[in-house]
Image 1 (spheres, helix red, strand yellow):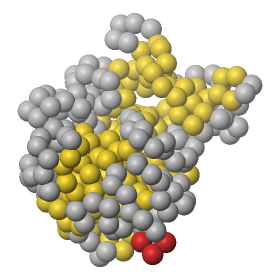
Image 2 (image 1 turned 30 degrees about the vertical axis):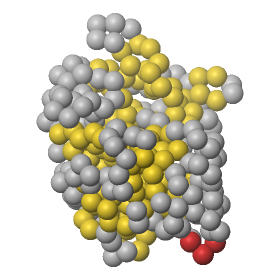
Image 3 (image 1 turned 180 degrees about the vertical axis):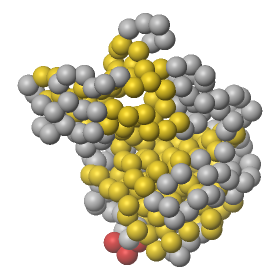
Length: 287
């Protein structure tokens, strides 16, 4: 089995803290793939200690984001490939130090009174989203429902939203938005939960969507929350599901903009009935 090589790719600020808190940093690793591998094991060395596994990826994911690091502390990593026959030798060891985080953070748990609009700086750019029982709900119209925070502008961005489906329908999708320029130009990371079940990173240019990276994925169970995230650092774009990187690609079209989320349908003509679904816990960092 071919021994994987490991490089430190970049430093990307990320935070799950409240507004005004000092955000933790993160390190992004990437390595060369091994023929015959079914996955990779990532190990990190505790400062002054031993190596231990912190995560795994599937065979076609050769990158890992470690978001459990502290600023100005050196961390070392190694990777090994595995399949049904066992593990490969370890890669070379690569170390890096997260930079101090200067990113700003915005969170919204939507725990406020029921209302026909979101408030708290949100701009509704398509459809209708409202607050009910401390969560966001879309009205049942078969269309795209989208809201953005136009003031969360930055070249480096990370956004995560928790979603739950109340019943999968053809073309239904849940998405997070980064580098939002206007209603016809932005990046979109989304999960399609019926018809072609998949995860996708897309760009929308002059109102036309172009897929940049896609993978198939089983649909979520009704009422089961999943956290869908989208990240941008320079031309690098990443989609995360429940904190794990599932897709990564590169595109230079948009360099900055706002952030937001959407619930909607890709093909209204094939959808017989709309349903009110759930969004909650919007978390964004930017600089």
